[in-house]
Image (cartoon, rainbow, N blue to C red; front, side, top):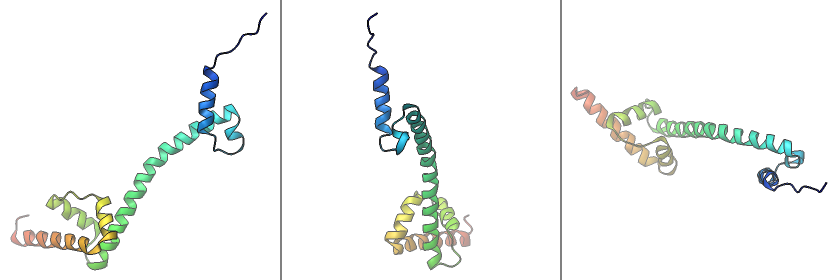
Amino acid sequence: MTRIRRGYIARRRRTKIRLFTSSFRGAHSRLTRMITQQKIRALVSAHRDRDSQKRNFRRLWISRINAVIRERVVSYSYSRLIHDLYKRQLLLNRKILAQIAISNKNCLYMISNEIIKEVDCKESSGII
């Protein structure tokens, strides 16, 4: 009986997976079964950590804003600033506020002072 030559599809699939795991150490980049397991594991970790990265950055921005706000005004906090921003319908997200807090503190102080003044004026006049 003559020898049958196999196709190239399975080999192409394995080489594609091998390229993905080529930087892994030891058998994780050499053995086919372990390569597929490690690829699945790596993709699951990447998907999970993208969500946690978003959470971590949000926490970092909030702590930066809060630190800068509490420096100047003693009784003012992050939560009151965000509440007053929503009252005035200012669309500044936390990322932008954190960048302003780092690069130009005076600008953030000006924003917070204007918000405080306007909210105090409205509360004293009885509009709210």
